[in-house]
Image (cartoon, rainbow, N blue to C red; front, side, top):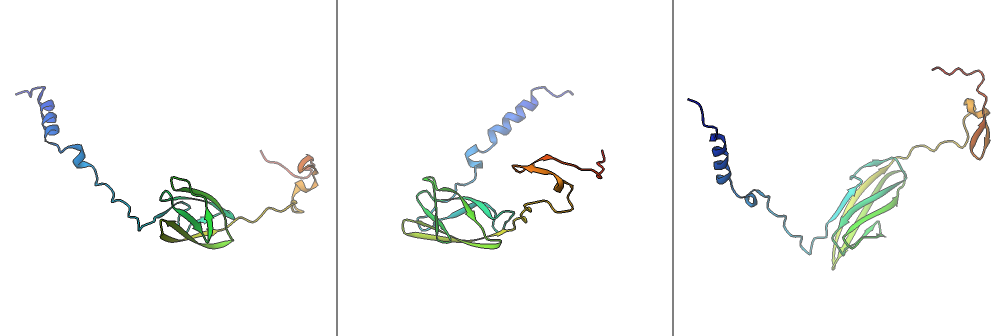
Length: 153
């Protein structure tokens, strides 16, 4: 016996009518932040990150209205609590102490960033470099002789 064409529609309608309301499927709301808690969130860099520079752009947030300092140096914090600051780093491990204050409540966060900058380039090419024989004007090669060197295509 053939199945009626409206049967799948009828089954779908029944499933929708028996399903819980969408509000019941939503996750519970996050608990409100208490005034005694002054969270510090660092978006970048990750804790323990290794950066290839002698500085880092430090980004994150605190509660709106809170102040923030890193190793005693005050950072500019927007009215929305967001901060983005250029911080110089020493070569190797840098231990940073973040301190946030809001309404008499203080929070601290220890944070580590490793700086591993690349070695600087020499001011002039080494003696073995064929471009060493180039005449330079304002830092740009104006005439070069690469005789004796074969360039493969």
